[in-house]
Image (cartoon, rainbow, N blue to C red; front, side, top):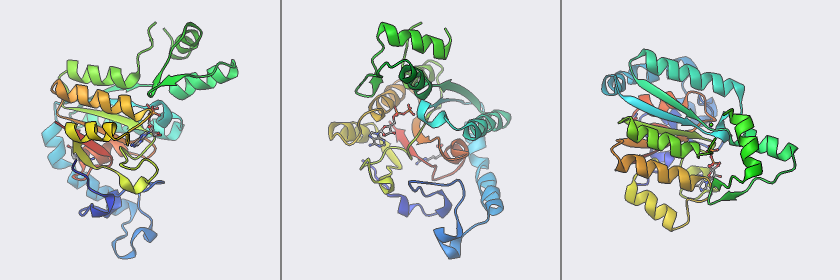
Length: 245
Ligand code: ADP
Ligand code: ARG
């Protein structure tokens, strides 16, 4: 397990992650190194060049997680990130979930949502709500699974899952324990040790399956942070957890 605590992120202190990570650092994040949002933007932009060159023409499958897609402002920023990536030559493919919206409707109809190891158990009654919410989508497949298999089938370079946590946390209640980079053996160990639990299990498993089928890297990143997609793809340190073979 290649575990790099966030505090060791050296080149861009502004990319370190906190529980309530904001897109831009505040002066209190380190007075001597505080950057204005403008400086920060310019740095990200100039740091982007090698990544644009490396990933131009490559397919990047992005799963936008149910829990992370509640805020309309963030939704707009994810879409604008995808447009930007496409304009600079990458080939983004978006897979979206619908968990919170499905749960909201289930609640209104007094049906208890049921999950087993992080995956929804879709009985006949729940299925009606699922098809009502997602319109038509007659067999409910977990969107992480869809994104992973799609990435593999398309020969994608990357799979990126946007969710509502900073990435894989070695200690799930400690936002400072972000695993910045690891490999298949590392995540399997985290699952065996039960450090990865609940909804993170299918997410990690589909990353592993995608990588085993030839996708180069799979990242789990924080969809609550504006432009997290650009941070992950276009910077050296990235933002969340990147899993490699
Ligand atoms: P989404 O709706 O984005 O698909 P889920 O809610 O299914 O996401 O899964 C993400 C959740 O997994 C996190 O919000 C967190 O509560 C849980 N989780 C369990 N173990 C971990 C871990 N080790 N690191 C981070 N999150 C974890
Ligand atoms: N931008 C680079 C890439 O997409 C590096 C990302 C590193 N990310 C991480 N979470 N450690 O390949």
